[in-house]
Length: 261
Length: 375
Image 1 (cartoon, rainbow over the protein chains, first blue to last red):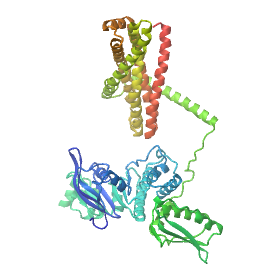
Image 2: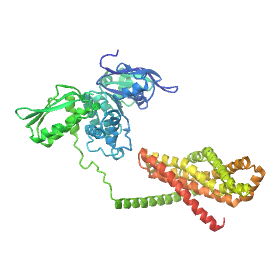
Image 3: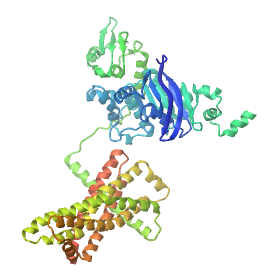
Image 4: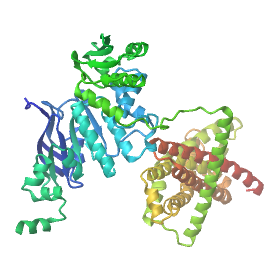
């Protein structure tokens, strides 16, 4: 039985493409209502870890648990049911370009609830209003700015009031103000919806602003380098690599000279 | 299914107390705020308050309901006391209200009148013609650059395109040509045998394949195979801004992308056409020898007698023109593509349609021209 408040557990996860091992033996727990940050250098496999957690990639070894239930070992029908409680915001928004925003947000609603088209539209409008896109129902994704596409993607991710929201680089390509507003929105949604949020990012400002817990993937040792609340990691982590990452120190030399001096 | 309930009660001091109760779930449908509508409109209450003590669980359906109620209250200027609502719901309502609707953002689809539509279509046709002509001009200039060895493209790309358009198209060209040849032989044989002229089936197959069908069939196969691929490639490159990147680097997308494709197809089509002629004649031979029992030597002698070099070079020349047309249509539609998945699909479709129209039109023009020239 999983510990009370545990929402997602990753156990001994190894991610590999053929014989190339990207990361091995990842172990961590996401608690209910956490804003959980997955961080690490570019190309270390953060997004791939996220893909493993939602079943887009299969682990080479190990398991992912939602609550006490193994997601990895669940059959396709069971998985589909579990994924209904999960919303994902992809890096580029991944909105369907041939549909309007209302149709994009309404798609999961029409698929999984018995609502009639008018009701679907109503809820889709509500979701768009929640992310500050009231009145943009009939716009196509290509008519929107990058920040608006991200927010529309978020509206679609939370269409079904998910318990878990996954974000892949939510602030990538956004200006500092939009990025800050998105952070506030994520916090607000976590508090009001009571959702658990998992974010892949390397945006330091948002890591410290909203992260309640985190893991750091080390590209050299190919496994977890550290885990804990981001501010703790910055101030107290013994791994110089992690501290360097979180303090934006330029390279190993500054770290070493400060250690020597 | 059990569903959420909402009721309203007026107290003595004019407060309208809206009570929400039970489980509110999207699955159960959306309760309409109409019931409360007349309560708010008939004799506006002094104030609206909420009671959620009997609320068991909630999701967006409740938020949606309450947002409507809040809007109605604001319209009629009734003050509200939201204290009775769960804090999550209160915050979500505040969030939904936070950004006002952008004025003029909502686009209303107006369906134009018939006259408008005719006008729109004609201007669009005009624009598309101008675009095609201007691309034709640009391509001609790029060809000039190429002839002066000043065009910038990667020769590796050209070789790869030649391989894709040429060698990799062999299986499908083989299949189609063989079948077309044997169909000609079969259809012709049935008619010719009535006159005891079965042996002339060789002339029929030879002339038809070499003069027209070799070039046309190869052209159509490549329109579907390579022309569509070019449109999709260039369309996707437009979506991913690769074409913009080339332009800002000062490299002409026409020289870098369109030119190699034109050359690849212009070079490969005549070769494929020759190959198709040969395979078609073999297809005819299979029927002539197998079904009509014409001796192989006779069949090939008849072919030799009926097909001359002028005819062959005429067919090959046509094939080269068709190849350039297919590449041109593919690249044109690709470059005109919009920036979305469906636009790229449209571009590929439109490339095939344009190619086939161009091939058939050119085929007609050639037929008349060759007749006048006496070829």
